[in-house]
Length: 260
Image 1: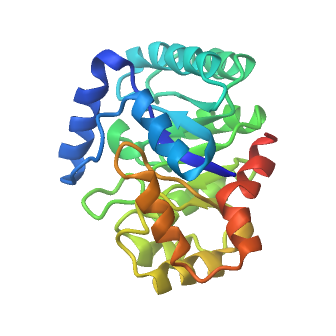
Image 2: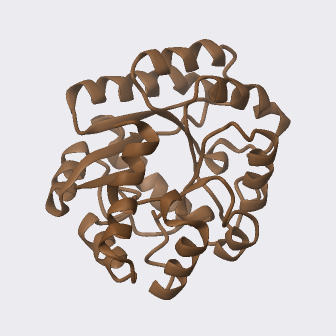
Protein backbone atom coordinates (compact mmCIF):
# COMPACT_ATOMS: atom_id res chain seq x y z
CA UNK A 1 0.00 0.00 0.00
CA UNK A 2 1.13 3.56 -0.80
CA UNK A 3 -0.51 6.90 -0.04
CA UNK A 4 0.59 9.78 -2.25
CA UNK A 5 0.28 12.74 0.10
CA UNK A 6 0.98 15.46 -2.47
CA UNK A 7 -0.90 15.45 -5.77
CA UNK A 8 -2.29 18.45 -7.64
CA UNK A 9 -5.45 18.04 -9.68
CA UNK A 10 -7.22 20.51 -11.97
CA UNK A 11 -10.44 20.61 -13.98
CA UNK A 12 -9.87 18.98 -17.36
CA UNK A 13 -10.34 22.18 -19.36
CA UNK A 14 -7.50 23.98 -17.54
CA UNK A 15 -5.25 21.07 -16.51
CA UNK A 16 -2.70 21.48 -19.28
CA UNK A 17 -2.48 25.26 -18.84
CA UNK A 18 -2.18 24.96 -15.05
CA UNK A 19 0.62 22.40 -15.38
CA UNK A 20 2.43 24.62 -17.88
CA UNK A 21 2.19 27.54 -15.45
CA UNK A 22 3.73 25.43 -12.70
CA UNK A 23 6.54 24.45 -15.06
CA UNK A 24 7.17 28.09 -15.94
CA UNK A 25 7.06 29.24 -12.31
CA UNK A 26 9.72 26.73 -11.23
CA UNK A 27 11.62 26.60 -14.52
CA UNK A 28 11.38 22.83 -14.36
CA UNK A 29 10.00 20.39 -16.86
CA UNK A 30 6.63 19.12 -15.64
CA UNK A 31 6.20 15.44 -16.48
CA UNK A 32 2.46 15.43 -17.14
CA UNK A 33 -0.45 17.62 -18.16
CA UNK A 34 -2.16 17.39 -14.78
CA UNK A 35 -5.02 15.16 -15.87
CA UNK A 36 -6.75 12.99 -13.31
CA UNK A 37 -6.58 9.95 -15.60
CA UNK A 38 -2.80 10.18 -15.82
CA UNK A 39 -2.51 10.60 -12.06
CA UNK A 40 -4.46 7.41 -11.47
CA UNK A 41 -2.61 5.56 -14.21
CA UNK A 42 0.83 6.48 -12.85
CA UNK A 43 -0.08 5.83 -9.26
CA UNK A 44 -1.53 2.42 -10.08
CA UNK A 45 1.83 1.33 -11.47
CA UNK A 46 3.40 1.50 -8.00
CA UNK A 47 0.39 0.49 -5.93
CA UNK A 48 -0.95 3.85 -4.75
CA UNK A 49 -4.33 3.31 -3.11
CA UNK A 50 -5.00 6.86 -1.86
CA UNK A 51 -4.06 10.29 -3.15
CA UNK A 52 -4.23 13.48 -1.11
CA UNK A 53 -5.41 15.88 -3.83
CA UNK A 54 -5.54 19.65 -3.77
CA UNK A 55 -5.20 22.90 -5.65
CA UNK A 56 -4.44 26.47 -4.56
CA UNK A 57 -6.54 29.61 -4.86
CA UNK A 58 -4.33 32.45 -6.07
CA UNK A 59 -7.29 34.86 -5.95
CA UNK A 60 -10.12 35.04 -3.39
CA UNK A 61 -12.75 34.54 -6.08
CA UNK A 62 -11.26 31.12 -6.88
CA UNK A 63 -11.76 29.69 -3.39
CA UNK A 64 -15.28 28.32 -3.70
CA UNK A 65 -14.92 26.97 -7.24
CA UNK A 66 -11.71 25.11 -6.36
CA UNK A 67 -13.24 23.66 -3.22
CA UNK A 68 -16.35 22.63 -5.16
CA UNK A 69 -14.11 20.90 -7.69
CA UNK A 70 -12.18 18.99 -5.02
CA UNK A 71 -15.43 18.03 -3.27
CA UNK A 72 -16.87 16.70 -6.53
CA UNK A 73 -13.74 14.71 -7.34
CA UNK A 74 -13.60 12.91 -3.99
CA UNK A 75 -17.16 11.79 -4.71
CA UNK A 76 -16.18 10.58 -8.18
CA UNK A 77 -12.96 8.87 -7.08
CA UNK A 78 -12.89 6.90 -3.83
CA UNK A 79 -9.10 6.86 -4.12
CA UNK A 80 -9.02 10.62 -3.50
CA UNK A 81 -8.71 12.33 -0.13
CA UNK A 82 -9.35 16.03 -0.62
CA UNK A 83 -7.71 19.09 0.87
CA UNK A 84 -9.47 22.41 0.37
CA UNK A 85 -8.02 25.85 -0.16
CA UNK A 86 -8.49 29.30 1.34
CA UNK A 87 -7.11 32.75 0.48
CA UNK A 88 -6.06 35.51 2.83
CA UNK A 89 -8.43 37.99 1.13
CA UNK A 90 -11.47 35.70 1.21
CA UNK A 91 -13.84 37.40 3.64
CA UNK A 92 -16.09 34.52 4.73
CA UNK A 93 -13.18 32.24 5.56
CA UNK A 94 -14.74 30.80 8.73
CA UNK A 95 -17.92 29.66 6.97
CA UNK A 96 -15.95 28.29 4.04
CA UNK A 97 -13.61 26.35 6.30
CA UNK A 98 -16.61 24.87 8.09
CA UNK A 99 -18.14 23.96 4.72
CA UNK A 100 -14.89 22.28 3.71
CA UNK A 101 -14.92 20.08 6.79
CA UNK A 102 -18.63 19.28 6.53
CA UNK A 103 -18.10 18.22 2.91
CA UNK A 104 -15.56 15.61 3.97
CA UNK A 105 -12.32 17.32 3.01
CA UNK A 106 -9.52 16.36 5.37
CA UNK A 107 -7.27 19.42 5.37
CA UNK A 108 -6.19 22.68 3.77
CA UNK A 109 -3.48 23.39 1.19
CA UNK A 110 -1.72 26.77 1.26
CA UNK A 111 0.97 27.97 -1.14
CA UNK A 112 2.32 31.26 0.24
CA UNK A 113 4.52 31.79 -2.85
CA UNK A 114 1.58 31.51 -5.24
CA UNK A 115 -0.69 33.47 -2.90
CA UNK A 116 1.98 36.13 -2.37
CA UNK A 117 1.80 36.36 1.40
CA UNK A 118 4.35 35.58 4.09
CA UNK A 119 3.33 32.37 5.82
CA UNK A 120 3.72 34.02 9.23
CA UNK A 121 1.81 37.19 8.32
CA UNK A 122 -0.53 38.46 11.03
CA UNK A 123 -3.24 38.56 8.36
CA UNK A 124 -3.32 34.78 8.44
CA UNK A 125 -3.61 34.40 12.21
CA UNK A 126 -7.45 34.38 12.33
CA UNK A 127 -7.51 31.83 9.51
CA UNK A 128 -4.98 29.61 11.29
CA UNK A 129 -6.99 29.88 14.49
CA UNK A 130 -10.13 28.68 12.72
CA UNK A 131 -8.31 25.85 10.97
CA UNK A 132 -6.84 24.72 14.29
CA UNK A 133 -10.28 24.91 15.90
CA UNK A 134 -11.60 22.59 13.18
CA UNK A 135 -8.59 20.27 13.66
CA UNK A 136 -7.79 20.35 9.96
CA UNK A 137 -4.14 19.77 8.99
CA UNK A 138 -2.52 22.38 6.74
CA UNK A 139 -0.23 21.30 3.93
CA UNK A 140 2.13 24.21 3.27
CA UNK A 141 4.28 24.60 0.23
CA UNK A 142 7.63 25.15 1.94
CA UNK A 143 10.68 26.98 0.71
CA UNK A 144 12.14 28.66 -2.36
CA UNK A 145 15.45 30.51 -2.44
CA UNK A 146 13.95 33.03 -4.87
CA UNK A 147 11.25 34.29 -2.51
CA UNK A 148 10.65 35.02 1.16
CA UNK A 149 7.08 33.80 1.58
CA UNK A 150 7.31 30.19 2.76
CA UNK A 151 10.83 29.69 4.05
CA UNK A 152 11.48 27.31 6.95
CA UNK A 153 12.03 30.17 9.41
CA UNK A 154 8.61 31.64 8.58
CA UNK A 155 6.99 28.22 8.99
CA UNK A 156 8.68 27.85 12.37
CA UNK A 157 7.18 31.21 13.32
CA UNK A 158 3.73 29.88 12.36
CA UNK A 159 4.30 26.80 14.50
CA UNK A 160 5.37 28.90 17.49
CA UNK A 161 2.37 31.23 17.17
CA UNK A 162 -0.08 28.40 16.55
CA UNK A 163 1.20 25.27 18.34
CA UNK A 164 -2.20 23.57 18.00
CA UNK A 165 -2.15 23.91 14.20
CA UNK A 166 -1.31 20.59 12.54
CA UNK A 167 1.33 21.54 9.98
CA UNK A 168 2.68 19.53 7.07
CA UNK A 169 5.68 21.27 5.53
CA UNK A 170 6.11 19.98 2.01
CA UNK A 171 9.40 19.19 0.28
CA UNK A 172 11.19 18.03 3.45
CA UNK A 173 10.54 21.39 5.03
CA UNK A 174 11.87 23.67 2.31
CA UNK A 175 12.25 23.20 -1.41
CA UNK A 176 15.76 24.36 -2.40
CA UNK A 177 16.24 25.46 1.24
CA UNK A 178 17.02 22.16 2.90
CA UNK A 179 19.85 23.63 4.97
CA UNK A 180 17.38 26.17 6.34
CA UNK A 181 14.92 23.34 7.00
CA UNK A 182 17.57 21.54 9.03
CA UNK A 183 18.25 24.74 10.97
CA UNK A 184 14.67 25.70 11.76
CA UNK A 185 12.25 22.80 11.24
CA UNK A 186 13.97 19.46 11.64
CA UNK A 187 12.94 18.00 14.97
CA UNK A 188 9.98 20.35 15.44
CA UNK A 189 6.47 18.99 16.00
CA UNK A 190 5.47 19.34 12.36
CA UNK A 191 5.20 16.86 9.52
CA UNK A 192 7.27 16.80 6.33
CA UNK A 193 6.38 15.30 2.99
CA UNK A 194 9.03 13.96 0.63
CA UNK A 195 7.75 15.53 -2.59
CA UNK A 196 10.07 17.45 -4.95
CA UNK A 197 13.08 16.67 -2.79
CA UNK A 198 14.48 13.24 -3.54
CA UNK A 199 15.60 14.22 -7.05
CA UNK A 200 17.60 17.16 -5.67
CA UNK A 201 19.26 15.60 -2.62
CA UNK A 202 21.66 12.70 -2.37
CA UNK A 203 20.11 9.60 -0.79
CA UNK A 204 22.43 10.09 2.17
CA UNK A 205 21.33 13.68 2.74
CA UNK A 206 17.63 12.90 2.35
CA UNK A 207 17.95 10.01 4.79
CA UNK A 208 19.80 12.23 7.27
CA UNK A 209 17.05 14.88 7.20
CA UNK A 210 14.30 12.29 7.58
CA UNK A 211 16.01 10.41 10.42
CA UNK A 212 16.84 13.59 12.31
CA UNK A 213 13.29 14.85 11.91
CA UNK A 214 11.71 11.52 12.86
CA UNK A 215 10.37 8.67 10.75
CA UNK A 216 6.91 9.05 12.31
CA UNK A 217 6.59 12.62 11.00
CA UNK A 218 7.37 12.08 7.29
CA UNK A 219 4.91 11.35 4.48
CA UNK A 220 5.56 10.10 0.95
CA UNK A 221 4.43 12.45 -1.82
CA UNK A 222 5.10 12.87 -5.53
CA UNK A 223 4.03 16.45 -6.36
CA UNK A 224 2.18 15.19 -9.44
CA UNK A 225 2.20 16.45 -12.22
CA UNK A 226 5.82 17.41 -11.54
CA UNK A 227 7.21 13.91 -11.19
CA UNK A 228 6.66 10.32 -12.21
CA UNK A 229 5.39 7.97 -9.49
CA UNK A 230 7.63 5.07 -10.46
CA UNK A 231 10.74 7.27 -10.47
CA UNK A 232 9.83 8.85 -7.13
CA UNK A 233 9.40 5.44 -5.53
CA UNK A 234 12.73 4.32 -6.96
CA UNK A 235 14.40 7.36 -5.41
CA UNK A 236 12.70 6.66 -2.10
CA UNK A 237 13.82 3.02 -2.13
CA UNK A 238 17.45 4.14 -2.41
CA UNK A 239 17.18 5.45 1.14
CA UNK A 240 18.56 3.08 3.74
CA UNK A 241 15.41 2.45 5.74
CA UNK A 242 14.05 -0.78 7.16
CA UNK A 243 10.84 -2.20 5.73
CA UNK A 244 8.99 -1.07 8.84
CA UNK A 245 10.32 2.47 8.46
CA UNK A 246 9.40 2.53 4.77
CA UNK A 247 5.86 1.43 5.51
CA UNK A 248 5.45 4.25 8.00
CA UNK A 249 6.49 6.86 5.46
CA UNK A 250 4.68 5.28 2.50
CA UNK A 251 1.29 4.96 4.17
CA UNK A 252 1.04 4.29 7.92
CA UNK A 253 1.84 7.85 9.02
CA UNK A 254 -0.72 9.27 6.58
CA UNK A 255 -3.40 6.82 7.71
CA UNK A 256 -2.85 7.79 11.32
CA UNK A 257 -2.71 11.54 10.65
CA UNK A 258 -5.93 11.63 8.61
CA UNK A 259 -7.75 8.77 10.36
CA UNK A 260 -8.11 6.90 7.07
